[in-house]
Image (cartoon, rainbow over all chains, first blue to last red; front, side):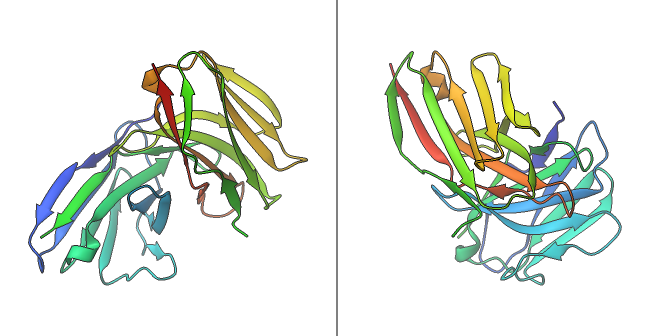
Length: 115
Length: 112
């Protein structure tokens, strides 16, 4: 199956700093990628849809200035958590599809801990 | 009412048992159906992908879709302790932004 790589897998940062998470599609081009957040023992919560060459579409309740998304190429989307606070600590996961009719493949996830 | 309903469990069965996991949905526009397995602190791993009613088999896994009843199932035969994970159903429409709608996930434990 297709491979989606996410980096880093774990990050610990100090409160007030910014953290960048990368999501790459390794063997296909993805015009659209998705960013999710997952709390312990809960399902995935869609945060935003990342569109190559245009602004991301954020879900209701997600602060776009807090969670900056850049989709600069067909194989790379980045999520930057700005001015991180302890409540931003969570598991962040990205996904990508080859095209509109195919299944979504997920990255390995990034566990963010803000101290 | 949520668009996709999935019993969160937890579900615990002995090794070798047949496991049945289910999801119901309310949106008749859903056309694509997926089952993912997620181990703790890992990203979801695609197990099955279907887009028509009926059964699809892959090894010990069988996915079943009944669009008339808006009901999907995943069966695991000869369950193994390594199958212990959270299983998520997901689905989406043909149109739109390819957004997936997930069930709550079912935590499954296979006891040796």
